Image (cartoon, one colour):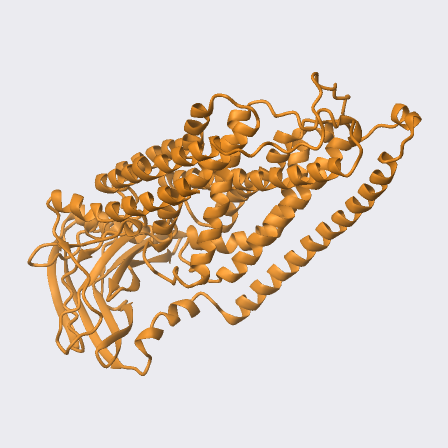
Length: 605
């Protein structure tokens, strides 16, 4: 216990040091950085407007720096804002803009610059308008969005279709304030102030970029200025339908689970009465789960990998639990840039000791001897595939010159966190687990030679059982999956963490119950190889979720392009693999408790 506490303190110290490294790395690279200002202002105080990114509206992962488009730049050069790791991972790149938005100072048709757009610049803007690009900016940490331009479809005589592309050159900023605080900002573009950049134009185009600023007093308090973003995605009718769908789904699943549990308890009760009778003739005539008591606690093959899976799954279970705690206390408020990513990186590093301890402890209980290999396997069983996937996707983003590509400095920091925090905690946890004196509890002795498993019908094999096991838990979460996907892979905001917490709890309960039921049916036909089967059945929900990804991509979204497609299916593959490990661990742990209970309740020789 003292060793684990020491590991946690060491991790906190290392993370506090690592959190300061991105700024140092970027300063070493010579990048001009600006720090945060206080949110209180005096009249005419300059409040900077930061440009975050631009990109196709339908492809949320395909984002680019604001000045990848030939917009007007500040006269004193482009400055970049200091960002945290989570903000960088969220593809934000804050760059200064030439818009002068002094506090409570109105402006009318103020000129920004005047440009001569040659064919190269026209091509960039035309591509942005054609693909429905948007821009995202931040003003006093409040997000604003707008579109680059508009496209018109014209029908001419003879069935000829012509497309016209227009670039917005004027922006209206409508800002509300309460005394010395900025409360709200809205951005609108004027369709009348647009420049024709259609494909038939072969000459240069003169474009004058302007903006207007209007300040309006409001009674909304500074502490309530984010409330509008919480209400923004929640239409009352849609929220009511959301709750109704979740309740309906949960009630249906709980009824099915309760029905299954009732039948299972009745069958078990009859089995206990039958198997506890001292009737030698019945032993020769009957068959069932009692008669594999000498093999049911035989350790599984590939126990090194099995224990690594269980340890990593336990870590991911507690990681999800801690994220829900932070969400329910209000840490992840809307548009808190990168807060969720920062929390995931920090919590994954800090919970690494759990994975090492659980994996090594079970490996020792299963009489494993290669404990060093077990610890190393635990370190890489999830991080290894994730690192390979990240390397490929980051290379794709670099080729596209997207802000989704992590800078070299951020990659160095993440590698340092992994090598200085995650791996040491996993090793220390593994050493603590190896030295743990707990023995594996088995109510029955294991025979020297395994019992032969009878020939079973096809529907009792592993794959059909996984399909049956994954369908019921997936049906409990599929309604919520749409809202999560629309938030992660779209522009909607997910804030109903209470619903998600309820769904998560139901998912865990249903996974445990369905895996226990299938384990019982497996043992009832004298198939004693339940260890890997229970893990695979519990984790099969992750495969269903990945199947839902194809449905969402092709039927519910407008995503397209190589980069967006690879990002979507690549990162969702890693998320679903994490689901597989976490729910597989839940299924196996529940089955282990069940198997111990039923064999402790009967007389075993």
